[in-house]
Amino acid sequence: MPPNPLVLGVETSCDDTACAVVDGEGRVISTVVSSQLAVHRPFGGVVPEMASREHLRNWPAVSREALETAGVELGEVDLIAATRGPGLIGALLVGLSLGKAMAYGLDKPFCAIHHLEGHLYSPFLGTAGEPADSPPAGFLGLVVSGGHTTLFEVDGEETRTLAETRDDAMGEVFDKVGKRLGLPYPQGPVVDELAESGNPSRSPLPVARCSDRSLDFSYSGLKSQTLVEIERLERQGVDTDLGAVADGEMPSPVLDLIAGFRAAAVAQILDRLERLHRRQPIELLAVSGGVAANRLLRRELVDWAASRSVELRLVPLVYAGDNAAMIAHAALIRHRRGLVDDPLVADAASRIPL
Ligand code: KG4
Ligand code: ZN
Image 1 (cartoon, rainbow, N blue to C red):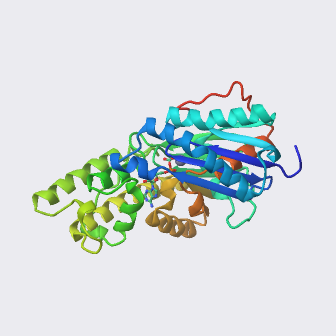
Image 2 (cartoon, helix red, strand yellow):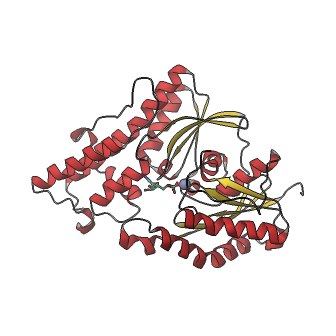
């Protein structure tokens, strides 16, 4: 392996076809994410079988663009990495099989990466051609996405789950509430943007707790309460079909409800962090995943961390959602530790613990 190896990452765990080239210092040389939004949007969510087929269709152009932008030939790549799970099994199989085939065919080392490991280390990626920062031996990782709401304690090569959602993931409830309001998929970013114009104190919702001792998350209660409130507004004659309403004419009771929903969802994250911090002071908190793009969550985390002298690493917005740079970067970290996988053996799994 050369001193500055080139890593090719492949990510196809859900509905984004992604390929990236990262160098030995974790610098992102190229990153391409091809969204399948237009394909899934008419169905209001991801259709698994269509996602697999779209990955196959998109891969040639996506990989070509990633290599051309990086200015490298496939044969010049030193390490190949692909997501092995969790995710949609058919979608995972496409990217993992491509990664395994390239590694085997080119006789290059291969890393099969856990999707959450990619997110977990993504706050250390640099932007604008900067190298990645080396993750410290110990830190607390919060991954908030469409499938996960998990707190990890990283201690060297050990990663322990401290808390996770007992029901829905945070991004999932943003999507479901948005879908009920007639918004297009993915609803999370739209709900976040609309919440900026609402007043949360006019529609407060309670912050869920599993028990005084548990740090686990729970979002299904908040989802149900929000759906009940939407019905209440409809009974009062308020038009809640936001998909059909022009910008600037959104009914303010709905915007207030959305703002109240977002405030309660974010407050739950801060509640768990505060309780954990009181038990064992957090030194460094690294926050990642699609929901780490949430405006209120970012603002609240910055304030909270500053007032508690916690070092905060928020994933750069470009790497919050699914991407292959985080997969290549996680592979680089694994490879430095001497961990590689046999491309003839590595297998995909829709559910796997980290
Ligand atoms: O990490 P990600 O791209 O895919 C998964 O691994 O799940 O996260 C996607 C999720 C979706 O549920 C999406 O609606 C949500 O992240 N999301 C947001 C925001 N941006 C993306 N949720 C709330 N606020 C946002 N700004
Ligand atoms: Zn993800």
